[in-house]
Image 1 (cartoon, rainbow, N blue to C red):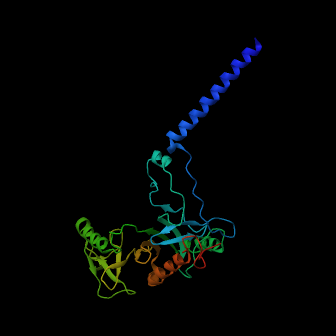
Image 2: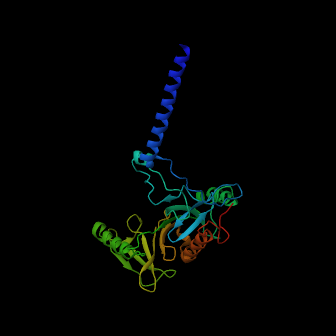
Length: 297
């Protein structure tokens, strides 16, 4: 009796195993899309002396490797949800694997105007920046650091110039605030200058005491007549800053710079130095550096 019972149990177990194996075969053959995805190998990434990994991607037309500790905040890649996107969208979003071809939308860093260096955490420039904050800003002295934002341009149909932007700014100023921007007879540091109502407040008939709606505007054109640099500067005692934008055709990027107006004479040098910094971060498609990275710790 016991022998017969054991045989029955054994047969049941064997049948169960056969059905289980058959079910697995069916699941794998009929639903291949649910099989684990093949893992993409991690790209080579450069590191600094503290073994921190660089931020990698493609900025405009160039693959780059940004030294660790340089970026102010984080790099945003094309397709990343915005800061104010629905949290549910952010939770579901999966960024493509990082590579030297993943398009970078934007990132920011701090640039020292006086010598063309950049701020990097755990490097001497971090101490320099803190020292300048403590010893210059409280006493109203010019702060030698500029805030930089870089934006990759990926729309092939969008012009790399500020022609429409400047024209529209002048139109809005006239229609909304009844302020005419008038070109000045003399250029300034190679820039064509426009001043609100020739620098006179129409309500008082005296020079502007506030630049809230009347910042000085300056432009620079290329040989084809396209506006490649657009600078707007405040001129009051406590708000004496410039917002400086320029395009670079080789990189297909737009750059924003914010700095104290006392450094306006160096606007061309700033543009050149920022491109030099970006060039120092260029890499081959495999991640091999093409030069010595500016800002590497």
